[in-house]
Length: 341
Ligand SMILES: *Cc1c(COP(=O)(O)O)cnc(C)c1O
Image (cartoon, rainbow, N blue to C red; front, top):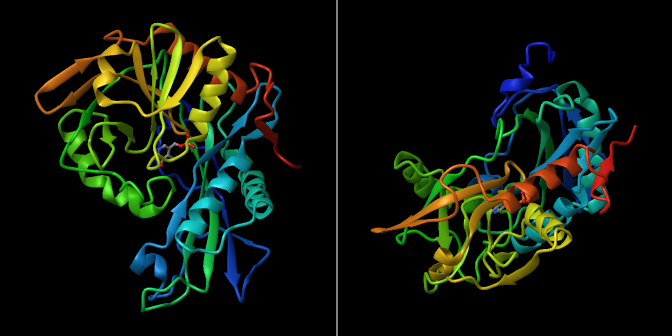
């Protein structure tokens, strides 16, 4: 297997085979030292709790080939911490932060040939996965867990400037219950959003926006990305809710926004406020920022910001974030972790 056939300019965001991935097993109360595998398939117990009862969680982060030629991983300790939170809530054995970060380094280092070159706009997408792999037939947490990390090269989402998309609100679907598991990256959340997402795509919308499940009055987030908005008064607004997945990208953008002179508001945001916003966007690791210029809910259509492109402040946030990631701008916040040799 080599990378010679990869067209770095046309990667998109899809599964691609790389050289290897790492697997750690938790048995008898402890994690093993991990092992690399080349196969793309794994043997799994027929009674594994992940298969039957959804004891499974994932993460997503990126490594970049930087301007100076070095490889840097973007804030892996944030994803490690989040996976610990997820594991606790669905009663899985948490992966210690040091083991998580080390596993990420090992897999990236073993797949250097698959990291898109500096300047291509691409990155190595890193997908950690934790699941109950031991047998239970009663609904009980597994005694065994598998933690694996796979990687794949992914392309830049945009060639040229940011391209806005349309979003839809379906009042007949919720993403997460008020005191449920919307705030953790548990696999089942994504199964729950697949039907509305496929329906949205069919109807011409790139993303679906979910409201709070209790009243459908406040904004929670998009299916796989946080909601952010900018106001004419240089405010960066993002919802506060118990059901939102805490996005690393959103946290970074808040920091950058402050440094660009904006004020950051994290508070309950009513759906009715949308017409007042100068710009709305979805944010997450895969795309960083996706501007949203139209939100449809039933018969109402709300247009936000310019029809094409996006407001300069949104572009600035995007540019600064991506410049830090590839070393074009200084990493003043210490977000990039250099790959260990
Ligand atoms: C992963 C995810 C995000 C984005 O989080 P990042 O850490 O920025 O990648 C936002 N919302 C949901 C529901 C997610 O699963």
